Image 1: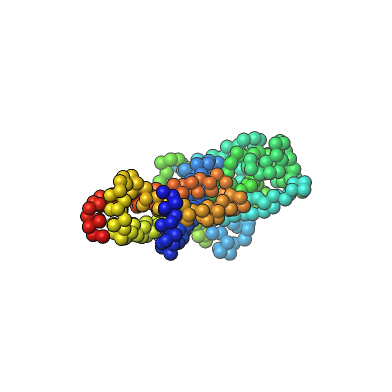
Image 2: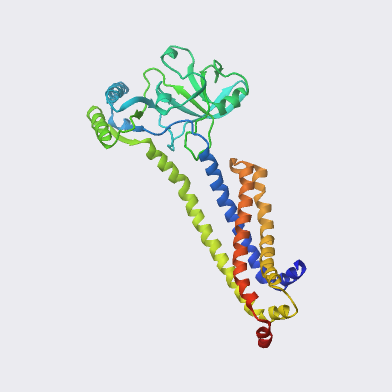
Amino acid sequence: MIKSIFKLIWKRKRRSTLMIVEMFISFLLLFALFAMVLKNTRSYLEPTGFDYENVWVVNMNIWGAGLSDEQNELIIDQLRRNILSMPDVLSLSNTSGNLPYSQSTYSTTMHYNDLKISTNRVQSDDAFAEVLGIKLKQGRWYNKTDEGNKEIPIVINQKLKEAMFGDENAIGEIVHSGVYKVVGVVEQFKLKGEYSEEPNNFFSRFEPNHFDRIFLLKVKPDAGIAFEEQLIQTASNIAKDWTIKVEPLSNYRKDAFQRTWIPILLFGGVCIFLILNIILGLLGILWYNINNRIPEIGLRQSVGASAGKIYQQFIGEMLVLTTLGFIPGILIAVQFPLLHAFEIEDEIYLLAILCSVFIIYMLVFISSFIPSIQAVKIQPAIALHEE
């Protein structure tokens, strides 16, 4: 059977080559789509290390008002005290602009002995961990007891701890040529949210009299529109020359989700459209082949070929063509895990290959089986009479 199928493919090599190319393209498209979906799904299942619920963001544009640093500092302090006095506010933290789910980053290189490690830095005051519900694995969060120390207290994530210290204890270590002192370690902190890769993170305490343009507020669960209006009114009364924007951190999360999934959905739509066109073309080719090969089918049935043999002939031919299209596609796909491309785990690439192969085989089988039913129903006497 296999030998006869290859003979048939060779006799119709021009049409067969087109089918092989279509299967090759379909495989690569599905492989890329599954790799992206599986990567993001796996990232989503990992904890972020912080809690976004009931957290609001007060974004203050303070630099266009033409005020001095001392005037801005007085306004920030007054805003802090007035907002904390609101009954719906549980805690408040002043932090740098690279807050969770934002597109802002603060990349720097951390030095430790002979190591130079690329890191992401988040600056904040003492209440940052309380507002975002960050849990410590070791040590403590920085606080007022660190004021006056020579080194700036920092908290690092477990990933950075392993990169710098391995299995050794990190608490109390002085890093970056004596600039920082490690006081705590958090298990995980995915700054960009659920669908991001966790970088080497460290959190540093604001130096005395330092402030930034972001407030993060932990509020009561029932805080809603009335709270938002009151918050905006309070901020506007104090900072009259500033532009102030207030919104829940969940809005930042929604924007991050859209940045992740909209390109994938668009790419997925293109993939589905192309694959459906290929499957419809496959159906058309099979119907055409069956109509042209009615005498051959009738002859085979007249000499005792069963319905199963007829199915095997047409379905087997399509599956062999599909397999020939997979071979170069798989050879290309396996290069990605071998090269560790795009920092995606090898098992995700391998699972994407398996999923792509399964989906295409299933679609080809179904699209081959439906026209094959027509071939089985052909009566030998009628087929030979037409011949």
